[in-house]
Amino acid sequence: QVQLVESGGGLAQPGGSLRLSCAASTKIFSIYAMYWYRQAPGKQRELVADILANGKTEYSDSVKGRFTISRDNLEKKVYLQMNSLKPEDTAVYYCKAVGEAPGYEYDYWGQGTQVTVSS
Image 1 (cartoon, rainbow, N blue to C red):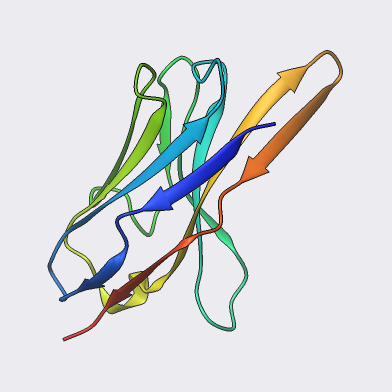
Image 2 (image 1 turned 135 degrees about the horizontal axis):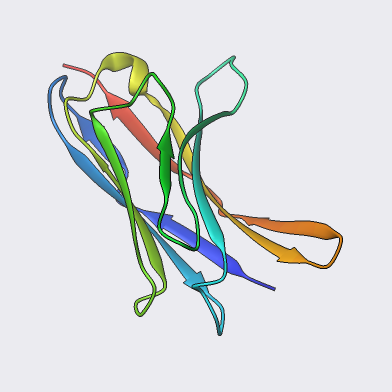
């Protein structure tokens, strides 16, 4: 079982920055692929960015060039640096960990942290 706790959300102005953190309680963090999702009111949850165990990263087109995902395996944390924020980035942001076992994958979700971008 892995518990994920997000933090760092809040209110930011358009053009501003926030840094989200996701702390994992697990013995071995490095094996997990880590994901950031977001869900705006009335919309489906969408993938924002991911970082695999080997460090490879991917971003959705809507955040590419503005957001950066990173991980610290010693601290057992994953981060999402969000720059040049836009009102449409307003959402609850969720962290997800995905592990692999022979023949299947398993995942864990955090409780989410609210990000509001408004002047």
